[in-house]
Length: 548
Image (cartoon, rainbow, N blue to C red; front, side, top):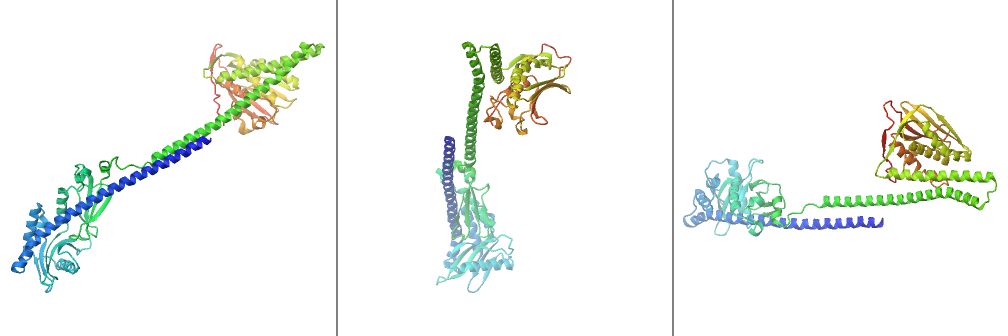
């Protein structure tokens, strides 16, 4: 038992270690994948930052040169340069090539120029407020893109590209800029996303971005500026700021879960918990089954020892009697005819007891063998078939002063085996003899019950408790009250009765007798007119005993 407990404990410890190792492996793999996502987010932010610098530089540098040369150029100059910048980027970008508006805003005087001058006052006011706030931020980049809050709170913002022009003292003097729908930024991000591999080739293995990544660019309010074309349930995710050209805008990159096997050797390990729990439960089940089997084996050993002890006790008594009287006769100490007759009677009686015990053990062994025995059967009167059994047991009852009462109903014909019926009756009478009081009346009756014939043996013993009336038919089973008593017994007599009766197609049970005692009943089917005299039945054993 200790070894079983140790095995279960060792299995639990190994399972815990395996679970811990698997969890550690998964944490390491997730950390690596998160780092890869960070690499992709940082790379896309860098690429976007570099290209935004190029767009803004190509758009506003010519305007700045004109400012130095011929005074303030018109706002329309921004439109011309923006179209050239998109052409240099190789982007068709219709929203940038035809912006919603271009503007010039003189800060000291408040003079404004919008081209075209068709925007509503609220939109123009929002644009100017955004431009003013940009110019007032300390350390603000001189070029960049700001987001104009929408006049409708549920609508998308506008994207405002700007250039701050400083006066001789370095303070903002004027602002040039363009306004496009915020979705226009997605055109540029899509171009840069397609051009740049975001993961290093040794990691990506030549796979395109869409096979490995899902990238989004979002403004602070959560409105997406760009979403990569192929969406999927996200795996490890990391983010990176876009930088000064688009402050507060965030790039987020998520790895495709299915790509984990390509990016990490062995892939992202799955949870081992179900497997380990199943293994642990299986180990526990095997351990419990082994413990139960060990207990059953120990119980079987005990019952076997009790059986051997019981058989030895039952053999010892008649053998002692036979040996004693045989030695007395051999020594000539039985001088009278009466003493010799009494000795002969006792030797005869005890030899019958030995024969009954040996035959019971042999019959029990035959019933338990896997190869089934065939008994010849014949049509017979059940009352007449009881004669041999009663004659075999009558001397025991007479010697103790018991009364053997026989109640027979003739003409109850059954198809059965005479020897089996004799063995059944002998075991039932032996049971009554052992457990009934001296001087009792044992009633053997044969009677009709519908289409059946019943053989019943009633005694005046202590009876059988209702909860034990089925268990007593099991091999080696004795009542707890009798297990420690001096009453001899092997525990196989009633098992032989039920095994023989079952093989003959009969039913067996035990019931209480009014006034005290037990009545054992064996019920046979009455023979029909078509039943022949040479029929043969197969005796099958139902003695598949298991200790409880």
